[in-house]
Image (cartoon, protein in one colour):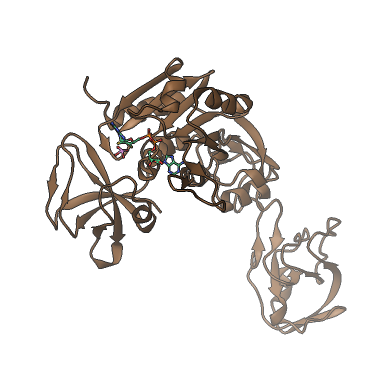
Amino acid sequence: MSPTTVAEHRQRVAELVGLMPVLQLPLDECLGLVLAADVIAPVSLPPFDNSAMDGYAVRAADLAQVPVQLPVADDIPAGRTDIKPLEPGTVQRIMTGAPVPPGADAVVQVEWTDGGTETVTINQAVQAGANIRTAGDDVVKGDAVLVAGTVLRPSTLGLASALGHPELPVRRRPRVLVLSTGSELVEPGKPLQHGQIYESNGMMLASSVREAGGIAVQLRFVPDDVEAFHRALAPYLGSVDVIMTSGGVSAGAYEVVKDALASHDVRFTKVAMQPGGPQGAGTYEGLPVLALPGNPVSAHVSFEVFVRPALLASMGHTQVERPTARATVTTSLTSPAGKTQFRRGAYDPTSGQVVTPVGGPGSHLLSALALSNCLIEVPEDVTELAAGAEVTVRHLQ
Ligand SMILES: Nc1nc2c(c(=O)[nH]1)N[C@H]1C(S)=C(S)[C@@H](COP(=O)(O)OP(=O)(O)OC[C@H]3O[C@@H](n4cnc5c(N)ncnc54)[C@H](O)[C@@H]3O)O[C@H]1N2
Ligand code: MOO
């Protein structure tokens, strides 16, 4: 049986995860999410003509001869709503953001005056329209200012708030159960016995889920026991959207994930890549389940290549790929025939776009992964790369 290609498995994972439902969420919870429908401006911005300066609302024609002394008929702080018209031959003191009174056609900044409160001497003339921010200058009521597909950033959330929206329609974050299997796994902080290791995939994968915008629920220390596996999962089935496991998928005698899920609709396959060869994907009690290999680098690379794009797509993102670049590799590399290799690399954009492999190909080399900032992609049909060869790097940060 020919191995599954990276593209085929990516497609399968994306289809399994699907799209998250749309709901109205308070703006506070929308950062990084994708707008699911166009938002029509219910008001104009600014909503009314207002002053751009602290100063005096005037009729420009009254300043034909300067200096000129005029009576200050009223005082308009920002927020005042009962604005009186400006009578000819008078001014009103006005603050930045306050409504310009009817009849005024300009604002003189306070620095050009003596700052008087009963009467004011104005030393410089202004053009009609000076220092007035007109209604609709920024947004016109009825405009579709925020369009479906927009990724909500601080500025777009600021705009939504300025338009008076307390909440927005978005696709919600997927809740991912991050389940770590392995009887050898021990909680960090506890003593280790020979043969045991500290659990690390759970922390790494949960962080990756969060970095992609999802919600991670960690379930660690599930032993290599099929009954225990099913029991551990049961309480989460109603509250998560995706189950993501690590470990227990290869060819050993105690492959708990494979054994537990084989009777369900989960297909275990070898994907033509290294690391990350053994993969499982399917459904468990109606939920998508993604079974990643247990070696830490394999788990991380599997997340990057398959899960991250699927989670981003599930939230409505169209940009689901990490940015890539072309770079020359500083040392020679070998790669297994017929497999896409994802080597860990340190990419240096400042020195002519070169990348240096970090550590070897071993999928247990977690510190090399932690020291790298990119994956170097060696295509399936390439078995050797000389130093100086051009490669594609996938940025991880
Ligand atoms: N006979 C074969 N053996 C193996 C094959 C194969 O094709 N034939 N494939 C190898 C490859 S490639 C990989 S990758 C691993 C995948 O193994 P599993 O998914 O079954 O994972 P485990 O055996 O449970 O663990 C592998 C390795 O990773 C450590 N691990 C697992 N979970 C965690 C965790 N949460 N935190 C930290 N470390 C973890 C575990 O202790 C093992 O050292 O299989 C190869 N073998
Ligand atoms: O393919 Mo495994 O994922 O090499 O280590």
